Image (tube, rainbow, N blue to C red; front, side):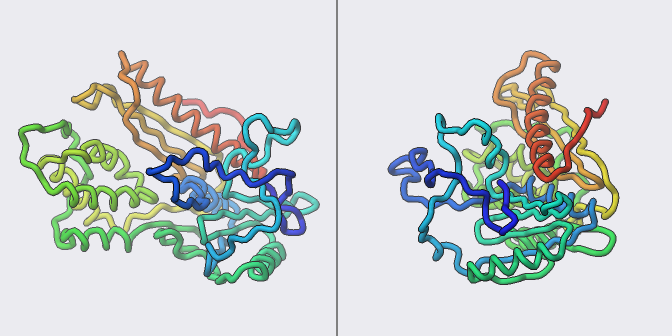
Length: 352
């Protein structure tokens, strides 16, 4: 989505499309959904800011849902069959990411929105000031200055680098589940561990298991090193046994020794987007499905990662690798398109 030079959105003649038809009565019919940016987008913005030595600022809307009255038409997404020729590019990649370019194409402002919190960065202080002034004139907002804490993520900006971490959140998890004084281990899972359904094993507290796993899932926003382990223990949410709980506790013990782990985005070191992918053939002993994984780097820090069990049963390691590569390519295309929106077009394909 584009921002005009006046600070307003690039307007389109279309009514608000809330896609309410996708909600089901009795399930989520009365629920209200707010726009949120993907963590991948947020990390990508931080990486871009670091590469170009830009500061990142933050604002917060005091009363988000009190601004519900609309006197004008709002363009969210063109419904199927109503896409206007020549304007297919409107909002195609990230609905909560906004870009504004100066008249000469040299000034740049990027805004990333997550419900009532927003961050913005770019290369022109005048654009920063105008944007903050226009937003605070329209909404009751707090100017939080430089980004330092966003969605539970701690951000440390210096003259040479940007660090992101969830140190405080990790410590809170350990304290909440009585693991603050546990002995640390060097890896989140044993290399020989193969978790399976255990019908004869001792039952554990299902609610406790889900609480721990749910808490750990959000920690993957800055911890790619535990992503595979979290994906593994999530497979047994329905009926966890003692062996599954022990695997969860090992992750907590790993966190005990790594709460200070951070992702570093070094300023001034420009690099292209680089991705890596792999698969673990037939790792799941219950259904023989493989696991796909990928990671992308922009500059010195990782910006996107994933570890998921494949949806199909592959018949060979080659097929498993192909499925994993396909997921990686889809993510690569999306990220390349997003970078192209902010005039950081990626060229060429890196060789293995």
